[in-house]
Length: 326
Image (tube, rainbow, N blue to C red; front, side):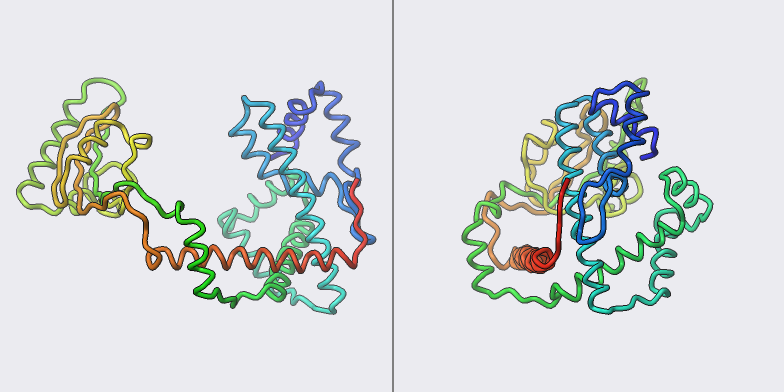
């Protein structure tokens, strides 16, 4: 988010005139929002941290001011906590006497240049300048984020284990999560209707595809050549799909429910396209058995344990530091 857009957000949220918002932005940039020992966190720091989130929220909630204000407030509060924790971790890194080789920082900056700007150094500099950030400050920020990542890995074990008992207990306590409705293993071919004019050409193409399928051509082969949806690369395969009238248009839902395994139907006309569908297999309303979801539960519990251990570590850092919020 550039500075003009950010000031525009201030007008919306604070109800200020453009001139007043500009003056408020100038004076607020260096306002202190928190102190961690002898280091300060300013409103400008929070702004830089929260900008990507605010830009997203502006796009999603532009016409819902009250909700937008709540989301921005929440994002700002979270950003302050992120910055406080970052200060604590950086101070712990320094206190422990660790040293970060500058070659690692060089590698990280090169990675960021490649990932975000496609290796275009000029594009990177233009964006940094628009955000009011120097290349040196960008490098320092990446250095700090690298240190934080390394310190988290050192203080939050990555080789944790979850006992079978905990997995079984989680499954029993959250059994409703694993109840699913009727499912089909589905493949589709979609032919879009033209935006304007008659749909005869699209219908004819769908009928020709159906005829080739009836002659024995593999559904996946036809889908990979002719389908116009995002599943084309997978031969039209959508995997296991739970049937739900809230998520499917009626014509497709009814056609899919009427099919038995290995049966296909088409062309099915909807408002924007013609469809050919193949049901490869079916599962009735059931609860996923524990072996099917064991890995998923294990990852959930591992994530929860890492969050718990990280909070415990951060709480210890906070306990021996001076922190004040404004």
